[in-house]
Image (cartoon, rainbow, N blue to C red; front, side, top):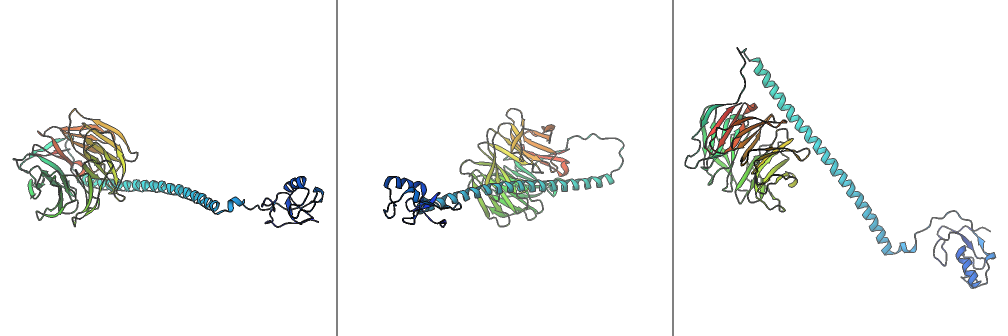
Length: 449
């Protein structure tokens, strides 16, 4: 007689499903043959009722391979909890891997979108320049001979913009929509708007209690901005000639100022170790962040053209790149010695130029996050200002003198030494047709290129 036990039949001695089952005719119990033979050899009886039993009496059972339940040790509460914990750990590890892959994909997508946006900006600018060139060509009259283009001072200089009793023009900017309008900030605490074409002062703006170290001209409004060691940022109406907002974002000297691409927000840096992001309409500080790990004064700040990231320089020679939305430090560029004095992004967003008190200018590739070129200047050369022209063709360096470099080759093409004091600001006119500079000699100079 063949007996087919259910898959849940367990050995009465071992409490496990037998691998080679057999049945005892004495007790009608199913046993593991290996165990029951050992028991019979020692006792000669059935383990269940003590009746005499021999190996010959055992009847084998034919079974298919049963599904073995887990060992009793695996069905205890601690064992179940451990199994659940192991399963949870595995799920969490898998989830972490997926999050890492997602983050990498997002970064790749962000980089691709950024490159696309930069390419669109470059194409739009080149289209505009081509159109302007065609219009100029259409109206160009035949010339008797060729004139060799060279850089010369189109007018000696402009003086009298700021007080002579406290000499020095400390900051400079041009109106992006009309580069004939020049904005300067002086050691005399005043902000001055000058019209190059009309050769006259449009407005003198008074209100700061200390020197003016940073100025910005709004690209589409008759509004200018200024910052000072008096810890304030002021928003001025050029037409009204008055201060319309005072932004109190810092508790120490404001060292840097930059306007967001939308024209609605200001980035500022300060010796109080914070950078701030403020609304120019309300004067309200929207966010204020410091790098607690560094604990060092910020010396300058500049928005990237896309407005999503920006750079700051520090007193301990670090250049830090920040993500505006996340308010986090996403990259650091070490290498300078001494406080960073100026930083500038190229218009296409690929390059960053930085200067410090080590008489050098470093060029960084933002796509590869590395320094690919260092321009070593004369010993004790003071780098005070850096600026790319709108086409990304030239980089101007202002300091002990003025030097203009052609991008990509990064070779010097022009040098101006007309200032009798340190050059504090340089700026390119529209289509790099001229260069403007200011200095501690209180003069404003123009050079045709």
